[in-house]
Length: 330
Ligand SMILES: Cc1cc2nc3c(=O)[nH]c(=O)nc-3n(C[C@H](O)[C@H](O)[C@H](O)COP(=O)(O)O)c2cc1C
Image (tube, rainbow, N blue to C red; front, top):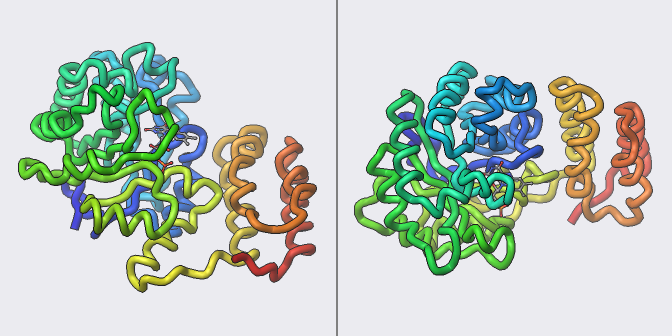
């Protein structure tokens, strides 16, 4: 059984990765329904939070039904990070996560995200200060290192544990790799195999089939898998992995009815949460996967992703239902 602080997250938990403009409350709710054991918010700027920037503050919204939920923040300034710990606490998450892995230039150039991999003492001292500043478990999400020549993740993880981190999720790429090449899970296994480590080590990067999740568990011996891209437009991925763990067999893919139900609910929840304009816009990226594999689907998809009007998107779903009801996905 893996535990994050006092929270029991089950045996080999599946965690929904923090993803900007993806891991919002509606999508997290769908992933939770489909078996995600822990869900994380997208990253939230500590500087934005302390300025009370509306966009950052809105990202703190959580639903009861998605617990346990972690709120992820990023920043490199001690004072801002500590102030945002206090702000985050007020929205009542179960876990607080620090983003030490974002490779994007505008984040890294301020020394935040993966930028901190160039200053390990700061990474450790920020973590320590945050742990001391809250009773919530603090988890860390990071990468293997800045570049291939600076992979010190075994030592880094040990130091983070020593200052009180409750779990570490490691993306098996360096900052320099961004999202290129294949994730390398061997250094993550080295972290896990360090006899001094006792907190959960979650693997991340390229878990895109149930077989890969089994490999992460059995070959690499990690404590859980954090899943990002494979879940976009496909929240069923969590359930499929769990079914495969239990039976060694693949679950039948979701039916057209289930896909339409998810797409409709997703859009409705997104509109309820962030209004029609943003809700319609930000749910678009999921449709390709929701309806992947249907032949001659281009025109329908086009209707879903070009209109700013929710009624048009719902009408497109209705058309799909009429046209493809009973379609067998493989
Ligand atoms: C669209 C998108 C947004 C992301 N945003 C975040 C983020 O806000 N915080 C974070 O720690 N990682 C972020 N990531 C990285 C993912 O959490 C994850 O580490 C990465 O996608 C590798 O896992 P995967 O192969 O399962 O997708 C993002 C990734 C994607 C694709």
